[in-house]
Length: 178
Image (cartoon, rainbow, N blue to C red):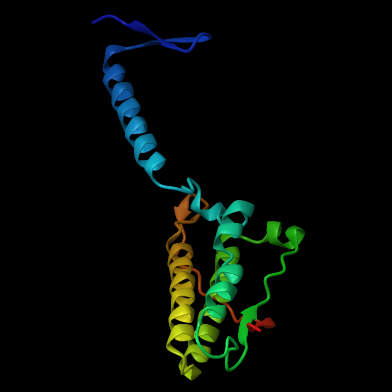
């Protein structure tokens, strides 16, 4: 078989040997399938380790307004029996940029763990079924984010790292609905 030129748009033509053409065709099909499946899913993130710093992703993860509205619809008091301890999430971008990916993951995991534990403690004190259900939903979301971060494959010098161990995380603010 002879080499045939493959045209990539109006400005690029590459001559490809016949053996590589079938691989390129397969790659095109796989890319098309990936595009088709991704177009069916809303808010697809192609780089999961960026979701923490992506402004749009953070906005969609912000459950405060949704929770305030839903909590107001619960019968009885919309106040929680105690405040939910929140992790300190202030980020110094200079210091953050100097941390290894494993340190960043450990810090995020520690913050999510602090939040999940706080939700569990407050939910255990709640008598109102509506409030308990809402906090359970929030706790489920936090748990999902923990699983995502735990399972990110972070490359360290070309080899995947082992799961980072969360470090102790200080609380700096509290959440209560009024």
